[in-house]
Image 1: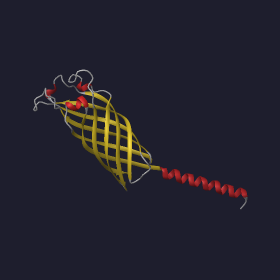
Image 2 (image 1 turned 90 degrees about the vertical axis):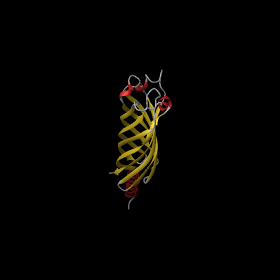
Image 3 (image 1 turned 30 degrees about the vertical axis):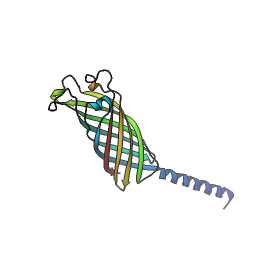
Length: 196
């Protein structure tokens, strides 16, 4: 083989190795999962409400092992424990929302820890005739920050995660807490679903 032929062979080998490395770095997963757990408000809002159930459904795109994107629906129910209401008349905060998340993780396959941050919006519906003028239904913007652990095996995925949602506004409780009510949303959930 001539020197020129050797150079072309080395160059082709180099491109082949680089291509294989890129292919291994690409994940190509599409995960769909549902989640359920418990969560509640913190701060001033936490003093006025109880911990309650949370639920949701999420679409996760994992174009690379170290980078993922999520969009999903989330909901929760938290009963009001405000002393201004009799137990029988106390309303509940019913939340329905959409959230997006950018996730970063080490390049692991079967067991993958991750952290993420994103943007979300929720509609908080105050359910109960006893709410009066104390609480009012409203849109609430939020910044979710999450950390968790995912377990992947074949076509199945499962996991556990905790999410801290910084509330950009909480106008639904403005009349209940003079001034600007402090608080966030915190939840812990289990996830289970499929990989495609």
